[in-house]
Length: 161
View 1 (spheres, rainbow, N blue to C red):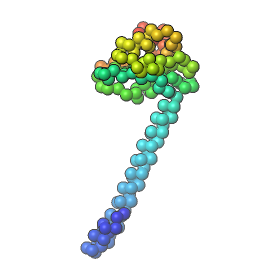
View 2: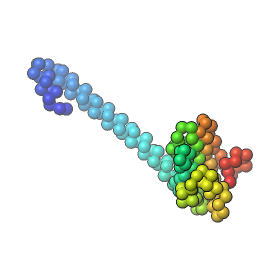
View 3: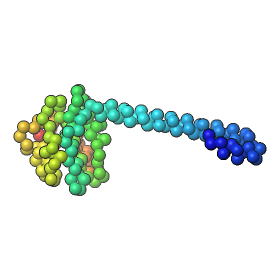
View 4: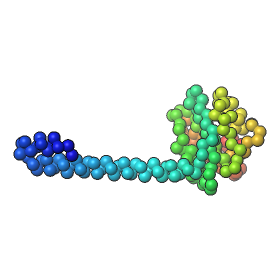
């Protein structure tokens, strides 16, 4: 605790106030340390969950629509993939898509990242020969609607290749 505060109180012969200020200061520092430790634990948990994924390709349009191609590392559940996708950057009112590929897949990287526009990025994803099919797809449509699909299960979403 800064000594000038205690000196201030001592000159007015209020040692008890100085002791009270000292206690408050120490409690404030302890509270701050607890908050920092808690926040650090949350960050470490998020990083541990993210270690199951590796971002391979990323496209961002001028209007801030985004597409991510992500490799799953090891065994990943649909719930883990969906939670990861929901944490990806999204601009309100804009579309964000995340495509998840199994380990060992041929995943679009530079073709997606260097695409000139959203149409070109989607052409890479859906039409480029030699790329693997993705396992999960997530779409935040930008209008509040979200969709997550397991592409191994027959569906009519249009998100699967």
